[in-house]
Image (cartoon, rainbow, N blue to C red; front, side, top):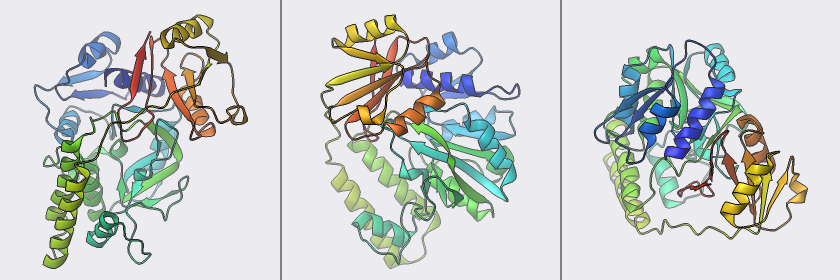
Length: 364
């Protein structure tokens, strides 16, 4: 996670130019060198170090407790924030009527749209539909598909990987519920914000990247935690019909049990052609030596040039901004193409081919 966090902070350093902004990192007793990296490379960041893993909700609330801003933006450490995001996000957060939470369109490390960027409240019937794989237009979908991917509109639930809210509103609803250790905290907060009479807005015209698989190690235990969070949400907000409650509870337990046997190992495909988008010949030589393969260095590449080979494209952060990189990932998005990024002035490349699996870091 250390390298993904560093990239996130580097992107924030480019984005945040206002003197009255601050970056707070709450470390949940990480076992790598993340804290030392922050102290060495990001002295402007306020670092809070926990002696144990408090869970996501408690850690976020702890960060809020020392914050001084009028707005709060919650970010996962495996996100990348392009330089046009915050000006546009704050503009919408002050212009839209009765704003509660706002959140952008999120894409994965493969350049694919993450549908969980906008969701509906999973009421009991919606949950049964999703859990059992039922197809019917008479019950709301789990995802908020009534809003198109690049539209702006009201939705029930936003993703806590990247959401923004006025601090006053956040405190008024009591912040994240500490009972959620991992997963479900964004669902619960979004629901309580709506109950307060505010509106949650999905901003499909603003895009950020979320590797997703890097925030946690995907395994059977986390599957149980996820579905446990769903049961917690229902016990807090939807205990009304005993029969329906029982059906949802049984459905959640059955699906969590079945998914606990899932094989979380991902087989990486063999790359047959590497491209580096950069003007740095020395960097190209170093990466090619580390990969022990031929690397084609180019200043630009077109989708039509990619063909059907298994291709990996490496973006040089000294040559392209994160905004340009994300746009290129979307333009070049194909089934046979993966991406890695070399953050500016860094001696590693990183990326993630799977939104439900761990990413990869290669140092050189």
